Image (cartoon, rainbow, N blue to C red):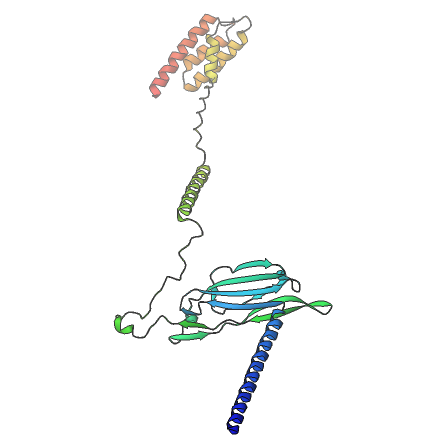
Length: 318
């Protein structure tokens, strides 16, 4: 009976000791976790990187996000810079940045929308794992009496890329068809920098303006068609010496016109003589050298006879 009590007492003591050890171990682990949490919470900056989704098909869109928590009492949040490298995965548009401030803490978030449609992103097998290079967060930190530029690496989760060529699909497809499966759901909608209707209107307006400009240039290049100048009036025929002499002989006699009348008769005599008409030439010289001045009536009669002779000569010549 005494031995049974001793065994029972030893068992109780052993259970108590084991319970105490378990409580001490749990307390130590909790203290360690608290210490680690306190040390982490005392860091002036922390950053995490996430991918959504972490499993994609070739050609899908991927969102990569970096969240940074900054203690503004230690680090200037405006001086925090982010550097990323995604290899063949290219941004679809500019990254979206946001910031929220709460007391002495600033929350910075940068989101990238990525896609890769090149042959380098096609998995060599049905499934392929991809590890991006860690992002780098740089900031100005107080070190001693000055400041120093420090950096923090932000790792990315592993990305799993599946090929769009599935096993067992070839049996259900035409043997001559390519074994590709297209999924355009994740691709962005077709967008235009400018509305097609507005672009058409602008192009038509530009075309009309160019046609008008060409017309103006052609019009200016054509030389002016001036009306032909009016013909100059025919010159007044100049009377020959014979005509002048006859006109003088036919004019009324003047008081001092005898010498001019004699010279006119002499000129007529020379001209008529050149025709071979000696009779009229002799008559003209007789009047020119007569003792008395030739009368107007006589000279007019001679002029009329001479004109008749000239008309007969012109008629024979025609």
